[in-house]
Length: 178
Image (cartoon, rainbow, N blue to C red):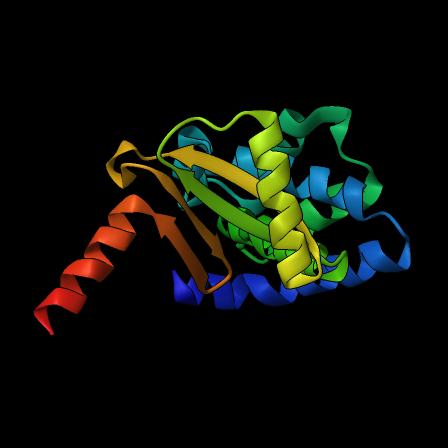
């Protein structure tokens, strides 16, 4: 995985620079997500590693699947990756591009794990509190984990804010043992 990310990083950075210079970050985001979805397909993955399939045939198939949803630059990017035998890294290129894009836009991704489903008002309040704390725009993705008993855990980058009942019980257990 680390090797794939290392290979994907220069491609993601190059696309990001191009997208930024053209003020077209959203379109490139869509292009890379489409290409990553195609590259992640099980049938396409089996063809990518097949020595019987030339890079030309593979790129034609790939571009045929994407159809007219790719502009000329997107098509050229796919052709470049196919020519270099790198189509399999498209999911990582897309992921790294999105990280660069959100960092550039000043947006932090927050993973919110809640014991119960949150209504819009609760989520809006939580995001507002996080934005005040981090002084950046926050995009939250919520998942449910009933084992938390109550409360939430918020993960932003490598920082974890544990406001769950389970976390507080574990902290109390550690305090009582010491």
